[in-house]
Length: 418
Image (cartoon, rainbow, N blue to C red; front, side):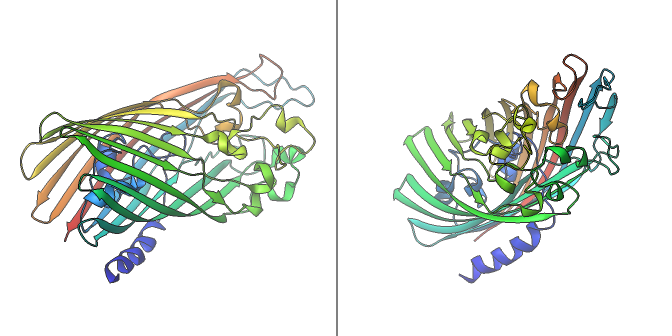
């Protein structure tokens, strides 16, 4: 018990230092260093005490250990406006040109701890973050007096109970406790569309708290094949009252449900191929899924029960990984993932604030084992992708907006096994 309480205390201090990710929409492609090195794959492969971020059942097989991770994350976001504004009354024209977001470097910590109680039972905790609906434009994007942007951070505290139901099959359950922090600035131009203009923008950071759950299964069905599966419920969050004039349902911003299934094919004891499929249900959350048009054009459309959102679609991601243990001390990893991106062409205007349009990731990584300790490294590149669509609040055909993003991430981790 002391082991876990000390770990939790350290983790909370560590993780509140800052969080930023934006890869599959605003979900990270992977959370542990090992998972990042495999482009997010690994739902069927036990690795360490952050495994509950992917599949809590893997915690039954990792033993007693602590894992720390630290990532340097570099998202590069921009938008380009083509075409001059019409100037017609009621039109919402943007200044032509290219604008790049500041705030390009983020430090992203994570921590996990697991305690093996006996041969069949373990308890653990994984703490990690989401975020990345983060932009910081020096320009006055929507022709107002302040710079424009949003900042979203999410922290997850995930205790886990895992049990082996046979020596090679396990199930687990993880309650999820979540915290999120949000700020918007420079959106005064949307005041006439808001049901609560005083709670639309420039109110500093607001906080909300919530809960959900995750369940998982992992088993060796053949000597050369593991199967893993996990499901995370929607996470119900308290409302962001300072932004009840921006988000649908008076400031509601829940976290969508997701599931992952996958295989680990052991070609040899040293060489493992991984295939995962993940689905993220952005349609679960009106503030994320509702389209801009026609919801914003209704009287006071922002902040109402059917208010405008970012128009994001559900997405499916395929993740492929390769892990090779070249010796008892060295393990090498590589991965590639391809996924849908959630932003339709019709929704680019509002998504200048959150251009989460990444589709392709490639990754490399290595672990050096030193007795009961491990040093882990990972490098991930999210290839540049763009989405172009009309300014839907301008005269049709007058302006087009292009959203673009690419990313780099370097991660280092350290583990102690007991």
